[in-house]
Length: 477
Image (cartoon, rainbow, N blue to C red):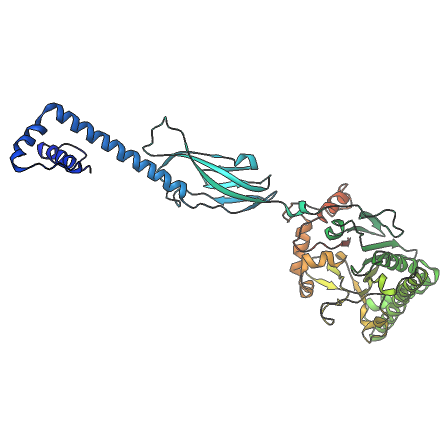
């Protein structure tokens, strides 16, 4: 073996030659010691010994370089997975990797997928544009490596997942179906002295198989100064629920357009001033009776219309299962009067003028029935002693927003029923509408906004893992 890197006198040269002889199974007897001394003193032999040591040093240096390069290549380096279309950031710190001896480097393959490395902040950043199992080639040179040699290469795996939204198909529903309706509808319309922005979107789960939008809505200004907004969510398990929700919404509006219903609402005009002036419990009781009688008749009419349609079309009533919520609103000198009804799991909420309070106008059929909901098609809701509690009345000096929504909005944005009473959750929803979301889609809730329909339609397409049901949201402001 080689034992010296430099000749430091005769003894080193003699030791090297002795080692070489020994490695070749040559022993130097005692009577040849003098000969060995003469051998190592020979000028030509000294030059040969020096060459051997130089070659040895070169070999050792090369080995150390190759060994270090192999260490870097074999070192386990993984960076986090990314997702197409979502901002990506991964730390890639040479110091933390113990790569301080790397003098030159470049990444091959990052730019192809929309990423780059910033050595100042030691981060790989960007927005991935291509999904797949990518192999990023890290090219490098280390200290001591000759400049003329090519870069060494290390493969770093990087998985970019596809945008989950791209995995969903959007298949058109069957326009030849007798109960077909548009898959997506977004409308901005005056509503008396107010504005209504409403959108109903077929859920991704339905679009993926080409089935129908089961949600529906309707609205109208009435001759007596009242306006009405209705939202219904057809049950996914009911084969004709798309028609059931449509019948329910339109039946409510048509009922309140009838001359008798318009006439019956007149008494509110006398009672509201008295109610505002706190004239006693009798006024409140009269208003409650009026709400129950007028809205109750509308609800009974909806149920009757559904029964008749089922009978005419050879359907079971449950085939038309649908939730139903609606609100009537009228501006008086004393403030805004709100009348409401709700059955099912769709909330109605009013946010006060300074956005410090939320008033819930209905309770949801979620807790008592173990997660199940009730439908306007169910005769039992009319017989229940809780039927009267499904109606609501509120008089407010002013307000900022009235919102009616199906569970396609409620589930992803509020998750649980208790959150509906938390004004902070409504602040979050308003901020979300204002653009504080991962897509940066903002809806400017202003009657003079020419892009409000397009903005709201885009916002309604928000991504929420696991929430792919129909979505309907009506905002009155």
